[in-house]
Image (cartoon, rainbow, N blue to C red; front, top):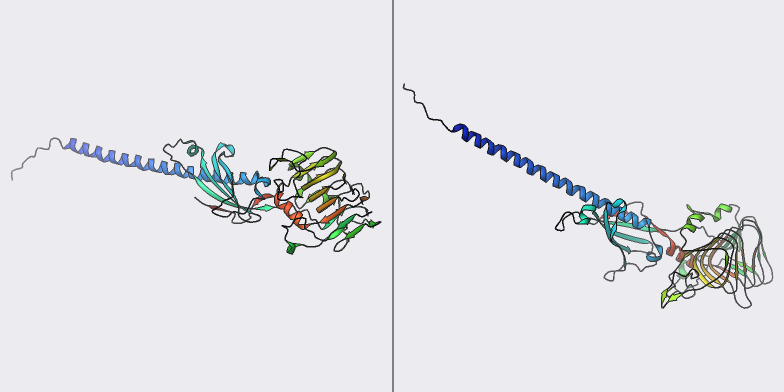
Amino acid sequence: MKRTLRNERGMALAIAIFALVVVGALVAGAFFAGTQEQRVGDNQRRVQQSFGVAEAGAVERVRTWNPDSMNRRPIYAAPDWDAVPIGPNLAAPGGTGRYGGMSYKVGNALFLIDVTGRDAGSASGAMGGGAGAQQRLGLVTRLNPVNFNIQASLTTQGTVTVQGNAQVVGIDQSPWPTCDPTTLQNQAGVRVDSGTVNTGGNGLVAGTPPVVNDPTLADSSFTNFGGTTYGQLAARANITLGPGTYKTQPEFNGAVCNKAILTNWGDGMNPTSGCGNYFPIIHITGNATLNGDQGQGILLVDGNLAVQGSYQFFGIVIIQGELSTAGGGSTEAHFWGGVMAKNATLNTQAITGRATLNYSSCSILTVLQATSLAQMMRSRSWVQLY
């Protein structure tokens, strides 16, 4: 057989070009896959950071809860949304991003915090073209009222003297027409440790029973309230005053309550006025005398408290010293709610003239709802809203 040789010149070049194309395609595919993976990772990281920003924003809203602006708002009802804006572009703690949203009151003591968070890059517009990540989180919170353990119109230590036409009444009474009469529950007139309660003239102590002797009462009963201390309450005070004699009354700028005036303690006598929903925490750092006109909220007195004339206070009063009251002729000095007087020196509690201490669960609950801080629910408190 005769062997024929073929001309194979140029095959090496073709094979090399083909190999370069294949290798180039593989490299391009690897780069494309890597770029996509990097983008997916960056997006996932931004999503997680945005979620963390939204979560931090919701927690920050709880931490900086303002009872004055939130607690007494109407319950949410669409389409007339009554919400408090968050932000809309607040910086998250640590500069990790920005957040905004709304707070809704969804029940008497329940609130929904709706927060949308964006990581720092997305919030700054660094992604370009509106790109970036964001996460929306809903957090359900409830009010956490202080447990003052008020079981009488007057809780104290030592001896109590009720003279003249004074009255200490534990029968539950409503100072406002909006109170629910079906929730009233009578308490004792005076709750005292081992001291005695003396009456003179037309002085009256009434309740169910009129007097309760509670040997568990101690100094700590007037400074520790179910995990909240007197000092913590004082640190939250809207109004702080030194020792002195004060006349307190509502103040207005037109129809708007002027809360900058330190002697404006709300308007319990006219609950529909501009100051009717103002329930401050008032802290007096020493002995005080109140001589007209009125106030409401939580009153904290580091020393002794003397009440004269026709003064009326609606809410909770905690006194680290002793309480003395005196009416003025045909006028009366009134407390609506609950009074706790530590009477640390165990002096006589003097309640004279036409002074009247009325237990009112409605007043107490109204004040607690207006002044309580919020806390997260213990279970199922949040949901991702996207």
